[in-house]
Length: 169
Image (cartoon, rainbow, N blue to C red):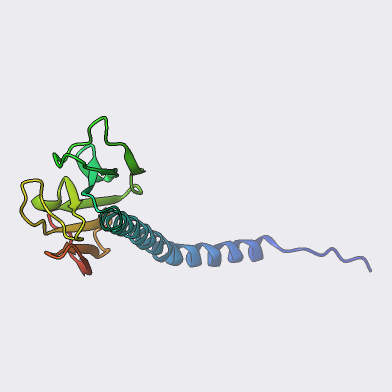
């Protein structure tokens, strides 16, 4: 007796139906994991940039400035030795490190004292170009509003504190 082996159309359609249901349930969870990972990665990059700026100011004994590119932190940033303290990168002040834009979907919102730059002096404290101490808050948000934002708070001593928050409107 010669029997053919294989699957029937009903078995194939049943398997495809079960797989479709499984993937429709799993996909929102997977995309949420990807968005959270993107937010964490961008947060880490920004924290590392700020930490490097502070470390270089202390090591070199000079004012080091981290300035955002094109007016927004999510567009990237540039770290340079601000020799004359004017807050602008002059031709005789080469870049120490430039960071590319953050991942798509990530929005960085900062209050006024830290909206354009963060400047560290050799004592490790953040100071405005006017001479006053620099303290402020930066929120790293994702365009998906169901994901909690990360809030970075720069204190008087130049240190960062990280917490979760809602993104400011």
